Amino acid sequence: MAITTDVLILGGGLTGSTAAHALANKGVRVALVDVHDQIPNVFKAEKAGPHSLPQLRRLGIGDSVEAVGRKLFESIDAADGRILRRMRLGERGYYYHDFVNHIRKQLPPEVQFIRGTARRIETSDNLQTVQLASGETIESRLVIVSCGGASQLFDQLSITRTLVIEDPAIGFAMLIEPAAGGKFWFDGSGVTYYPNSAAPRISYCSMFSVPGAMRINMFGFHDVKSTWVHELVDNPQAKLVRTFPKLTKLIGDFRVATKVEVMPVRPSVANGFRRPGFVLAGDAFSTVPPSTGKGVYKLMHDVEVLAELVPEWIKTPGMGTQKTSTYYDHPQKREADDHVRMKTLYQHWAATSTTVRAQVHRMRFFADAYIKDLIGYTADLG
Ligand SMILES: Cc1cc2nc3c(=O)[nH]c(=O)nc-3n(C[C@H](O)[C@H](O)[C@H](O)COP(=O)(O)OP(=O)(O)OC[C@H]3O[C@@H](n4cnc5c(N)ncnc54)[C@H](O)[C@@H]3O)c2cc1C
Image (cartoon, rainbow, N blue to C red; front, side):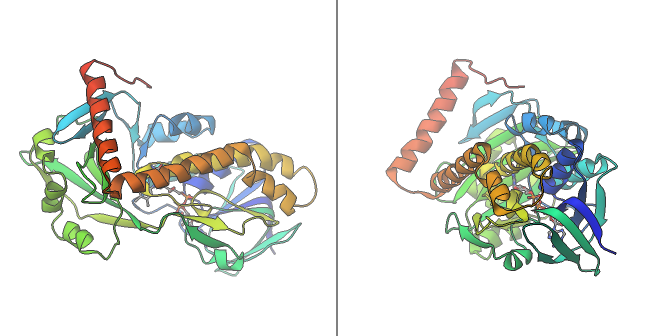
């Protein structure tokens, strides 16, 4: 016999798990399907900043990031071997899988978690039917598709995607240790280090404490098959020093303690989503370059809007396009999507443009931050 529910969430990453939490807390009957009982170790968002923390708290999952994350005492911007500015932003460093798995553990008992892979989906104005790889069928009034940016389900839903920028974005992650042992001077804080020019096509590298270690994540715009990426994977230490020649002046001699994790991303946005029966949320709606640091911000807006609208939708019959479109047209979602799109274009330009304007922009950013530090200005947001 088919399982029936009011809302079926396909994909229990950060978007789906948070949505399940938020909707169940509003009394909505929710089932959550994910391939994994426990999200495996995967390189995705690892830092929550001053913008996403209040959102996480509003959605009732602030405790999860506190439980698995490490509070960063200071957030330091640096370039050319020196500190540009220090800020107290209350950022948290965490591992994505720890964060999502903790949220899953905290789900209200009413949420029905089903381990499985959604294979087939049929949607209509009233009832949606999803078939899992196991053959099990689930019927639901609404389906929230939150299965990330690449899914076979998109074809069945006639969803296509448009690239926001032609260049592929990419993220790299590894752990580093001081060469002489002990701890880095910035242990317990985070340092964002910018390159001097657009030559390496890198936005920045971000060094920050996660529980028990020092992470270094680097974001930019390279094809995963490029020589640049191969060189980094083969000899990360040498490539880091070539990319940021004065990095050791700032952080001291270091060694790379793990293999490089490489995560390519094609920043894209979905088309053809105004349909009955389902909505797209999180990366399923749009993906951003990791350098924007906006993936969590964007998906939390999606979840906040859904938590406002869905309890009202299910009070009346039907789940037509008129209803589902109000989500995409919601001013909060539109504003967040526009902001993230602009940020994507900006990050790409700032990291890759070799024009004089871009170089002047870079120098002005460095000078502005440095002057603020000299006059003792410190952003203190938590
Ligand atoms: C390298 C990297 C670094 C990043 N860094 C940052 C950062 O610093 N700050 C920031 O804000 N954002 C960052 N992001 C973006 C952020 O991680 C994403 O926006 C966020 O993870 C999206 O979450 P999601 O739940 O929408 O998708 P996902 O995390 O992709 O979750 C999708 C889930 O769906 C499940 N699933 C897929 N298909 C099916 C199916 N058919 N049936 C059932 N389940 C299915 C998967 O198992 C998975 O659990 C980064 C992204 C990358 C790749």
